[in-house]
Image (cartoon, rainbow, N blue to C red):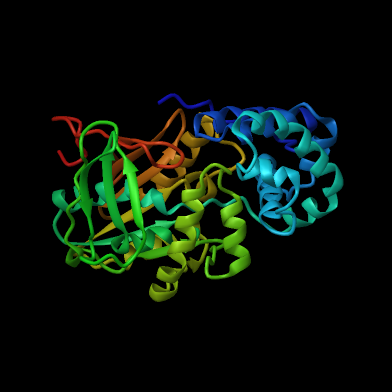
Length: 378
């Protein structure tokens, strides 16, 4: 699947031209990821000086396009659910009229409620969380478990709401063109929501023995507590309007989060990760998960250019070089297109492979079997 180029860095990220560029980028990304409505709204903002001025009130360090559209989405799901824009936003208008009406209603709504939109953005962060991403994690863990010995210690770096810490409790279903190819319940019971992942290509490995896994650890500088209703509502508002299933999954995961207390530890990964790796017993295997968090931890999240990713990877690899032991890394991220990679770091040497092609929303997933000579396990 082709994905749009990532936005370049803008040192003056509140400059109108830079903001307009970011909104145009978001419009392309929204088209690719299945949100024609946000594609229209992003283009509307990019062409409007007044809307760009409103977007510029987003908190420093946060990506303004995501913040503005999420703030509007939150207000439309709350006090303004009867506004004409809300009817466009949630699909209550006729499909033929929806996109045609969107730009005008959006500009009017922002003009009428600009101060409230700014207040809604204030103090919040553009940190997305999607339970379905675990559907890309499970096959990677299955491959690692099949290729290693010893207990596996998963450390989720930049864990957000800790949804990956709940991976054993989800019910996974993988299908291709409507045909179910595989299902898996790692815990043996349907403790959590059903995650349905569409496949392109063959069924990935799924079988894992939970006895091989220690209790996972999550760390994040600003953990997201989905058991707080306001935080849950904001996290849902960060989703595309058309992706109602993602919002349903977030609601369904809340009881699971309460039962298993999955909130990550509040910590700076740069400071604590070396000690967390060292704390893994000698006969255990540290497995780090970096799910859309490499730049947040080791780079500048506003600069998602290939060069920025390369610099962040270098800093991360330097940390692991000093670990003095083998460390496995599952990376779910993207430069040109989203993918899942498995790497083995040991003594400054890095071996790895692309394990899957995915999307910003994980489904569809194309598993890439390891080929002889290209496996990190050779």
